[in-house]
Image 1 (cartoon, rainbow, N blue to C red):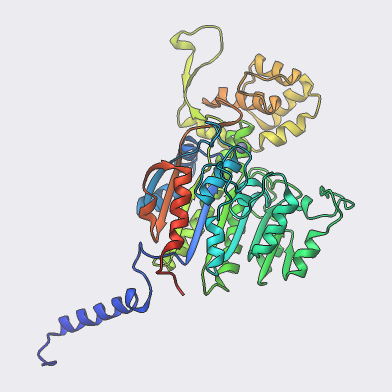
Image 2 (image 1 turned 180 degrees about the vertical axis):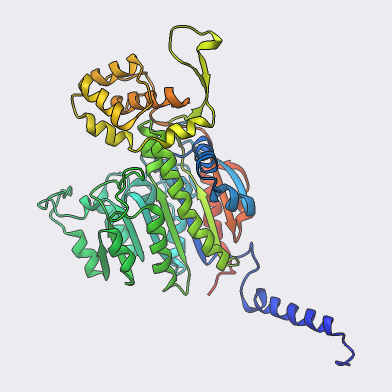
Length: 476
Ligand SMILES: [Zn+2]
């Protein structure tokens, strides 16, 4: 009987047995089912669809490169669109948005892990921790900032940083990487901004953490638990970063994958955030948005490589919490002399080249100008850092008087005037210096990615995220 089976059929049977052995029969779910063993949640704060599209086109036009989020994650996975309003405001803040996405309930502005109806929910990351999954928190903001904190903490006041750090200690993340050293230092130490004299670095070390404070140290370490604090507050914008000493979001992601993977029989949940896309948008800084979004996309690329190795066990989610700035390429008048066609200009691909020529963030440019900018200092700044750009008189005036340009551009008048100058040269304008209600993108790839398809609210996203842990199919 056996001999009569044709050779080709034999091979087919062997392949069938092998494929069954490597899937559900050994307790491993088929792709798209069960609780993922490895979860990557990437959050680009403040980045709307126009931010994404501008960074994607920049990659294509300037570097002839793919954008991983679109060309890999969305292309091979699923696409969702998410609304972002808070319970008490149409334009949210990061705390209310992250609370909704982490916990599955609507939240009020400023709420950190607390539902608008007064209940204290359990977050998706807390559910992961109960499952024995390792946690990773990676951000270029302060590690205690609202977005990461809302995924792990429930405190009435988003600025209760000591409570947030204490909660982190309880949850015992394997890697905690970012800025915000100021809340770890006793108030008597230089740079310390705590109200008390607690030395939180010593406390974390007592709990088994190794502390690292620069890129080479991070790359070397293979310790079980790592606390990386790379700046007193926010980390640098990508455009300003010292690439030998300070790690980027992608550098931190690479280290986190290495540290989490080495010790995770129960898997891990890594929260990875770029806050810089939001901060740059608050400053009307398109060049910084693009450079930081590109670095964020590189971080997503590292998770994509990981997914290619473990496609049946990995879920990658790429989200944003809200849009900041109302950014978009458009048409504009060259100056205010007339509305005639010959005084109009439209954005073109050549504008990407002009953006590429900018070598510093607007935060740094504002620092260079100092507290009392002079006309000479402004001219020197333009000459040194914005060659080929023109500064319209109304923007120069706004810088000299440190005066808001409009009712919607007010958080840093000098940066907004410089941002308006850049906008006026490259035709990518900012509508506001704060958050808008523009929906944001959800890109999902891997186990249960299909569940994140569609058009839904951020609280519904949180419910989908938590539902991942309701599966009985979890391993081990
Ligand atoms: Zn913001």
